[in-house]
Structures are given as C-alpha cells and as structure tokens.
Image (cartoon, rainbow, N blue to C red; front, side, top):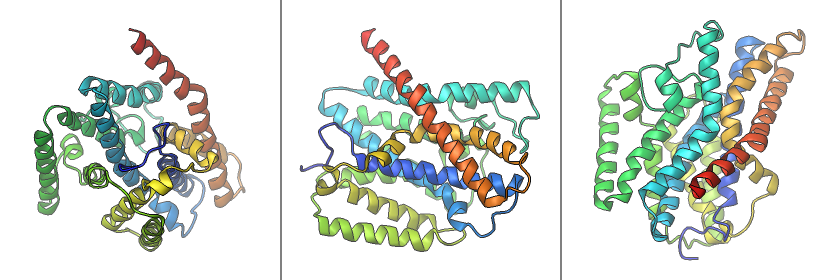
Length: 338
C-alpha cells in the first residue's frame, strides 16, 4: 500500500484500539475525581489524574480520521453534503438522547449537580458555542469537534482556501495564547490551543499519505512515543506539547503498512468501537455509582474507585451495544432510502 494503510474493510483496527484506551483513560480520570471528592482521597494517583490527556489524543485522532475519510470521499466523487451528513449523524445520533436528558434533568431538578452547574440550552442541544456550558459535562469537547467539522468544510470548496483558513486559525490561536488574551466561553472554544491538536492530525495525514515505513521504524517510533508518555504523564502538570508529539508518533506507527494490515485484538477493537458511547455515558453513570458507594460505608477509596469505574464502563458498552449501533444503522438506512 502506498498510502496510509487501511485494510479492505476501510477501518484501521489499531486506531480503534487506541480510541478505546483514550476513552478508558478519561473515564479513570473522572472516576478518580469522583471518589476523591465524594468517598475518600485516593492518594498519589498521577496516572489517573492525568487521564484528561485522553481528550488530547481524541482531538489528534479526529483530525487525522476526518482528513482521511474526506480524501476518500473526494476520490469517490462525493462532496461536502456527504461529508456533513456523515459527521452530523455520527455525532448527534448517540449524543442527543443523553444531552437532552441531562438538560431536562437540570431544568427539572436545579439542585441535581453538587458542583453547581448551570447549563445553557443552546450548547446542550446543538453543541455550538455559547457562554453557558452544556448539560453533559464532557460535551464541551464535542463543541470543539463541531467547530472543526464546520471549518473543515472549506476542504470541499477550495484546497488553497482550506490551507489558508487553517494557517490563519492556527496563527490566531497561538497569538492569543502568547498574548494571554482573556475571552468568554464562546470565543474561548474557537481560539483554544486544544484546537491545534485537530490541525496536527490533519497535517499528519497529509504528511504521511505515502507511509512506507518498515517494522523496524515502527518499533522505534512506538518505543519513543511510549517512553515520552511514561516520562511526561508520570508527572504532575505534564507538558502537553510533548504529549502531542508522542500521540503523533503513535499515529504514524499504527498507520504503517505492516501494522495497519493486521488486526488488533478483538476485545480491544470492541472497546474502541464503544469508545464514543463510553465517553458520553460515563459521567452520568459515575455520578449514580458514586452515590451508591457512599451508601456502603467502610468500602474504602480504591475498591470504590474500581467498582464505579467498572460500572461506568459497563454502562457505556451497553449503550453502544443496545442503542448506538442500531440507531446509527436505522438513521443511515432512512437517509439512504429517502
């Protein structure tokens, strides 16, 4: 294969696996926060405390995958309508039942959140920026996704315009960060440094479309990537630039022909397939689970941690198995038949 290697089924199972690990890392991060706040302190658990970095990987991977799938659409004679339809179905169909339910819960039970959240309807229902947070706490990342999807539309208009837009956007983000300009929540989404991870993923895809590196280089890249993650993520306040570099090296390695043509372990691919549902469901599930743990005095911090993490993971997998897969299939079939 002369391009980023993708098996005949169109999916790279190793990238699915990595997506699953990222979702699990975020879940463990929030489980750590929940237990420490509402049960008992876990003590030194820096790897769980740094689990928010799983979001960084999601963003890099999202930029890479969107660039790859959009290139495939263009090569098949498709355009921006098919791109936008696919993206909106993928993000909204699994999200809306949970996002709407959480918003209605906050509306009907204002004291529901022990953190004093006051969500806004616009962002909760549309995932578009506003100065109020979404009802589902993790949905702030989906607002970044939606912004990226909309800006990426320029790819289907004029390639030169797209690259100019990307360069200007990156320059404004870096300039705002260097100057320390304060912004409200809505504009903060647009000019957040986290958006640079999307751009890193896009750049990686186009820089490695002729990825021919051999297995020896793959091993070297993965050794460096995991070494960097072990060193950086084992520290409080890790340097996210180095984290981004490590994630980029992992993507290059796992899209090499010798690796991508093979299948990752099935259980880990399943975890990756369920990753979006796990990400959406885990915080509400954690909230319910930690309230249950508080009714079991004497259980202890670490048993509570593993119990609520397992319950939240199971809830996410069930949501994927029983709802997300079927709902996506039905919606896609109805749109195809229309």
